[in-house]
Image (tube, rainbow, N blue to C red; front, side, top):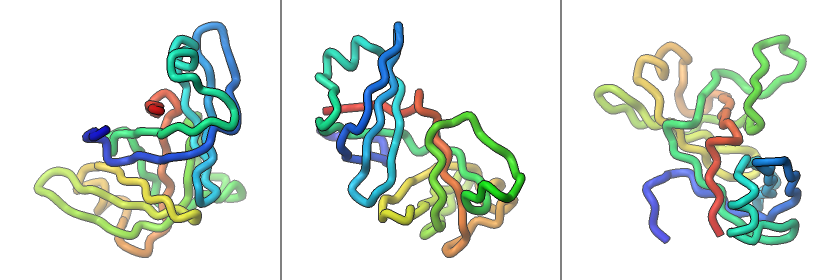
Length: 145
């Protein structure tokens, strides 16, 4: 399977929480990080998603929100409703005329790619070595098997 989405995370399903329409599916990634997706019950059935199975979580880079700084519950800073909040270190910034691609490496080794404006890169002070948070809504995670 070839797709245009930059972020593809293979993992093992650790939980499937059913609801009347949607289900919450959690994947454990090889490095110890986790990702949560919200998909329809029909998708759970069609894909055969079950605890212990394998899946690929796919997230387009423009759907990733970048927050300057790390994940620090004691900071008193903003809190987000998004289920996926990963603290890491910026390892690469590629600037274009309007947008930039920012790579954030997580402690477990996974790399999250975000596409944000060049102005946001400057405003947030993003550069290699800077701590950052990658925020992804669970509804923006597509699952594949």
